[in-house]
Amino acid sequence: MVAALLWAATRLPVFVKTTSVAPTDELAALIDEMNSTAPQGTPALLAIRPE
Image (cartoon, rainbow, N blue to C red; front, side):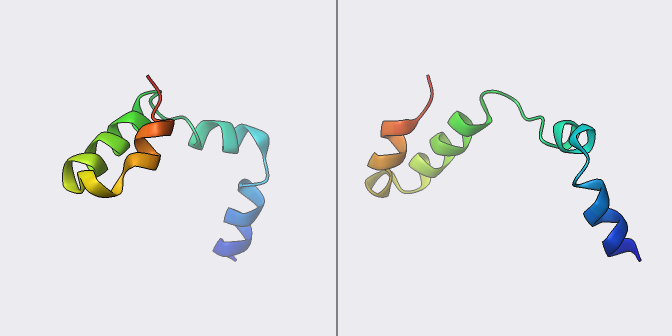
């Protein structure tokens, strides 16, 4: 029952828009963290990192 309710809720545009809000710099912060952990393995990520 709960699974069906959650599935139905995720089909509503208002629910999707509300839950998909993220800070604009979140992707850049994630790439920075990954680069600080393993700098030799992230050249492709640095190439697509937003400014």
